[in-house]
Amino acid sequence: MAQSPAPTTSPAAAPAPIKPVVGESLERDIVVDTATVRAVFTNRGARIKQWLLKTYRDDAGQPVNWCQAISLPTSRSRSRCALTRAD
Image (tube, rainbow, N blue to C red; front, side, top):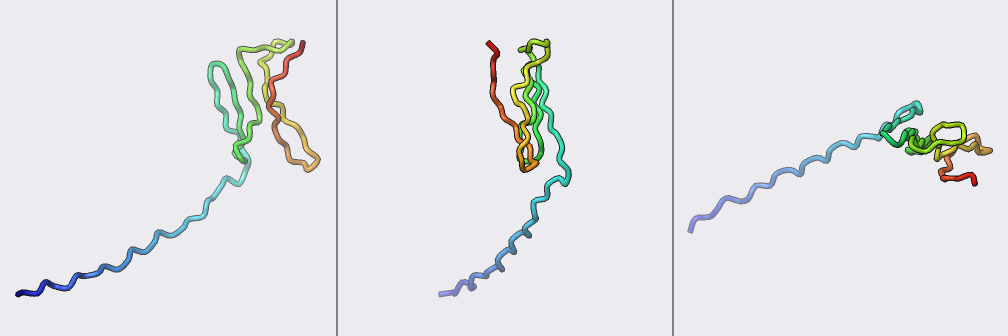
């Protein structure tokens, strides 16, 4: 009976090098503008900076801004989103 050749083993493929995640060094705004909404996000955690409802108007006739930026004592700003209505 003939012997079959010994199986050859290929060396394990080297894992791909790990590339560090590189973010943008400067903060910038990302604007999404549709027929009914204009949303402004920051590239720092995708926080919402502005959310204008174009089809709703305030007493001055301006689009309603659903998100108002608030200042915190730590000098970091955050957005608070709440739809408020004056009665």
